Image (cartoon, rainbow, N blue to C red; front, side, top):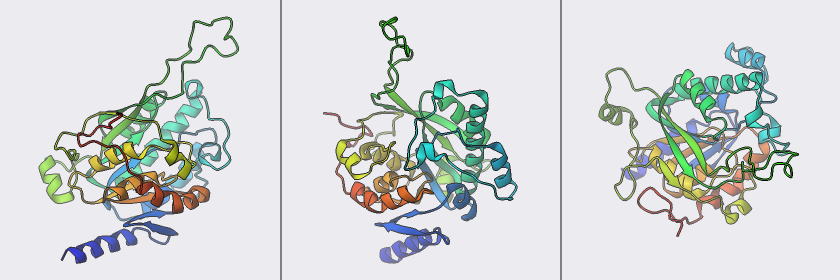
Length: 321
């Protein structure tokens, strides 16, 4: 009976590849597809959770292309290669985005939330990595797209952003920094609204969603995780500019499926690190990646990342000792 159930689940996962090129990572899968298209094509209520670190480039994103896609008239929906492509240009200065760029970014996430809502089961959770500069804009856009804001997860990690002296005036103002040095990373936690009148317990019974999974030590999942920066050994496996550590991702994917059952999706899969994290702890995950170079990278990177041992504790926190 257990073997038959596993085969049934694997068949259901395989069916979600549709007609896209894909490959397996253990029991999980990575699909070469644009996530907007893929999420809108799979059957409604097919997936149980989303865990992702989206791209935030906006320089080449145009609303007329958004309208064409929304109206079914084609168009070019493109995440700028200057942000998430193989050849990388400097990122836009998030603190200096003009009104048009901020509006483009907002519209991108409003429309993304809509296709996520189609694919996600009622009560399914969405974890979205962001940054201190853009989180208020991105989180508001996701709410406008129909997702229910639940809380914010704070990843405590010292980054290299901020803390610089005024540009081109460093010697004139040596005792000034233009921004604080970043010491945390905000993740938005959202949920697809449950059906009217449904309680969490009802949602868990019917959809296996609605709540978050407690830790292996039977503690509640906490909204602060003390995290390491991505270790060199992981960066040597996956040369991706926004690679998150396995120790962090495994905490999050564990929490995302309250009953430890169902399918997690990372719509912006990159090197396949989220898929690797889920596979490492025995969960099912589908990653979608539209860029061919990252898709090919994930063929070798995801299985190797899944095999890495991490220093997770049983209390939902990372041991840094």
